[in-house]
Length: 434
Image (cartoon, rainbow, N blue to C red; front, side):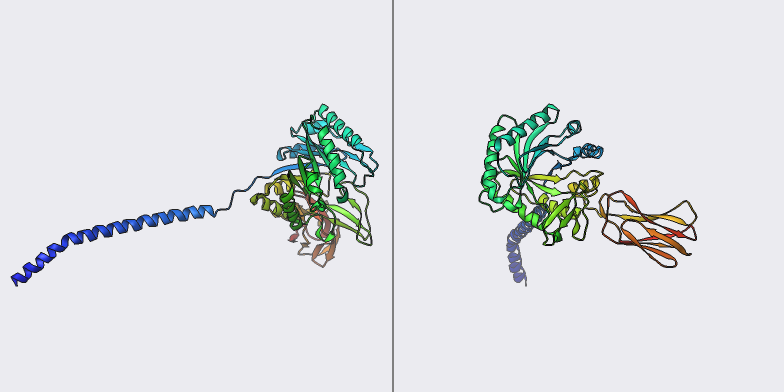
């Protein structure tokens, strides 16, 4: 027994160094696993950071001042919008079908006081009969000189010409000569480009004559799509970006128009900021939804387009331009804010007992369509009522309903009277149904 114990004790003692080695190996493996876990966690955090939403690309904003009448409302809009924009594109003159020049009498002081640079725009009639470069060049540069003398900081000259695709080579020659004449004027040469030119063999050479282009993606073509189709506009911009050798902006709309069509669906006339008295069964109001334009801008904030330098808005909204967005709405879209119109309705007691004027109000920063129905309810009889503007009356014994007859937009922070009601008591309840 003693012999057995001594033999096993010797074996046990012989195993001690080996057990120590195994323990050290175990601790080494454990520490390695801890380190590996820490490294994996660190790599996971790095990959998570990599999956974060990429930083938004800031968009530069220019705007067209296209009004021919420089009203107090336009002067006010210039002062308000000046801090929001980079450059004014100001209509300075039009060249008629027969080559005659029609200058626009601008308010030089109002422009200069904003402190923002100006691109002078000359619009050439799309039906210009013949090209005579010398008079056009001479008149354009004389206008630039006059504006500069009056204190307007002109940094560029823009030609807006809806040129037929077949005449692009002639147009390119004019632009080449104009650029040569501008060589010592410290001016950028800009043109308005049309989607209809995409795919034309002469387009690259045309763009090679200028410093910058503004691609116009709003127009009157298909009434079902209104003035602006965001999906089509996005496709045009991508195509233009792929072929343009120069930097470019995209002209986006802030306005609506009333269109007159003939029996064949062709456009006869367009009424926008200037009333033309269009009426009849073949007229239609076309507008642009701020939300649709804002969604397109969001795609450009997250995807870099080669050559794209920003937006040139058409046109500067004013308080007396009823077909343009309000300045508030325009600013909301430029800033990329996500808002919804917020409408309320109130019945305001009038001069006599039981008489109420009914108002609808837009309490948001976004222009929007007015509610479809507004109901005025009373615990007693409402005997008389009348609707104004876009609403008509549906009446029962104790309720008067104002129903929308035609789509109508109410500007941000505005209210409009839609009618009146007379009830036998002085308390009514108002419900709004969007």
